[in-house]
Image (cartoon, rainbow, N blue to C red; front, side, top):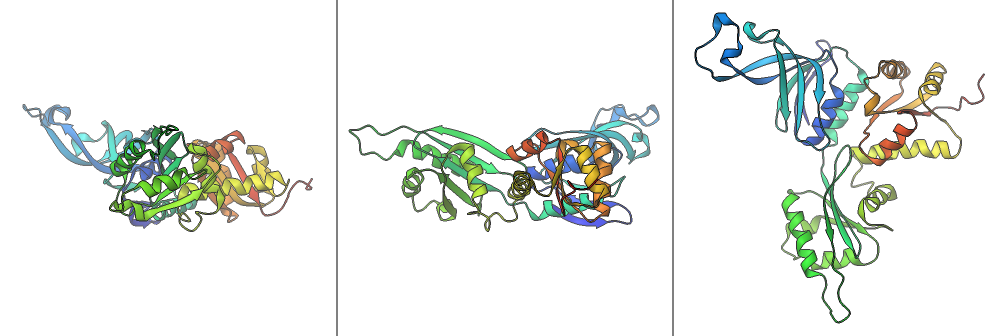
Length: 345
């Protein structure tokens, strides 16, 4: 994401969508009543009778749509914004319209409700836009995935053939399929994390031709497991902290782990609506974690605003990954506290 302007006085934000993660963020960032400016196509004969042309042509117009709801699916490449045209040519005002937002789109937003924690999340989204590829493998299967801001996106599972006892082969046929997939999805300067148990990943690395440009960007990490489980293990190991310190999903995993550590030692934590409300009443909330599915709930919004007044950190956690689902199971809202409130009356 590239931010052009943030104007608190006019509640206006101008930005460019640079990757699919930005679409996920925007889906959570936009709220009912916000005005989103962009370009749409309308048919000439959709205007009112006084200006209707005999010819039916599609024309491009600039409009501002008052948002009613959005449509977005995980890992899709488009966000649909639906609402009523409030700004634009007079003959189109009042029409229902959908606005498609794709990677590369420039948009302008006027927020109905200016929330400091949303703006902080917006700035984080601009800073954490690096795409990382993972290859997680053992002797049976290789999993190839992207580490996105909001989830692990698996795009290939390749079964590996075991060498026969009579053969000295090093899986060249399998390795060529993995290399082909990498070349299909890899983009210039993208880091590749190669994880898994045993020596299988090293065998694969050694089989990659030296002329392949992506080879020099591979980082090898030992894990006990392969597959998606191995990727999460690598993210939790601390080995990749320097490389992925700005990666949003890595940050979210760290936040949920911090909460789980406090729960495990019966320390400074709270979860669930009533317990969080109580913690806010005591001014005890240090970090408030809210799953993305809850951020339009009016009761949760009220808690977030109250926590913000107390200078608590507000973090939106994606429900699309394993740790977001843990937070969902805790009621969708939880907090790391400044102090324990268990002994308070």
